[in-house]
Image 1 (cartoon, rainbow, N blue to C red):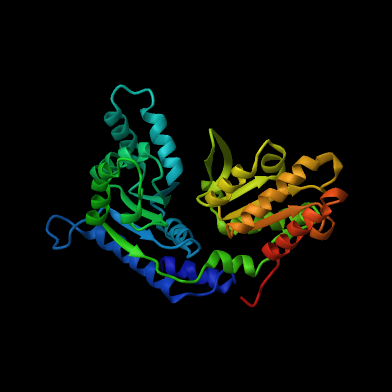
Image 2: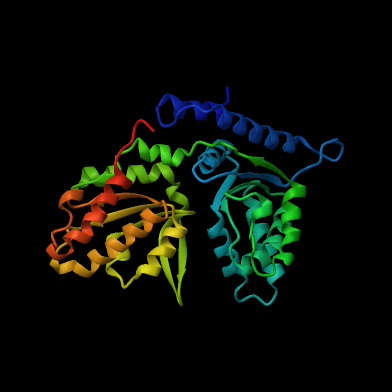
Length: 346
């Protein structure tokens, strides 16, 4: 007997990794049914052959988790984060004299290995991607690669208010006409629920706490498909290389010792809704500037309703030893308790 994607889902429930959710099970069954029926569709079938499935819904509703389950169970597909797909496409066409031919050859190579491609966290934020995406999907269809896409956005909301959006509208129509669009439509935020039931401030820094910290991170992301995201801030870009859509793993040295300012932290808070902050040291006179940046970072994350998970050398109450920042840090202490305390009853 084959091990179905529902069996796999139930094994997560049995091992207390997740709580069973009938809506998630129904979506998995629907995705599986569409994939199986599409494989059977041929020229003599009354059913129209489609190009794929477009799964969308709010942040934290389990889209990536469901996609990962189906990907692992399919055994005939490959998975890529949307950002990584676009990076590879841009690298392919960068020095090419015939961009269409380069894109076609890129897709053709994929088709020789895989019949099924999972694209996670699809979003369109820049005009370069907006103007090239329809061409990519044309070739994915031409070479009969079935797509399963996850996104936070309904197709109509992709690239909303973007430059030259009228040139992007044919792509939206392509998705609506050739894909099965599924709204996950689950009000529960599984990401927030997991955080509420988890320890999210780890101290001191040792092998045990580091393992716990990393294990929690792995519950939210597929670490084999992390990507690089650049946050635009004023006239520069801040590059983070351990990201998954709106989740970031970064180090205190990167985010608080580099010359970042208030506006940078505002832009980071707008980009990421969950931040894992590693290796926070004791804050003393030797790293006073870094302490000020840490205060600013926590302020901006708190005000933008972001979540944070911290691995630190000291407990919150003993983290700062700079006397003339004690009053200012009292607000940070309060906010850290509010952002990292466990709320099992929620």
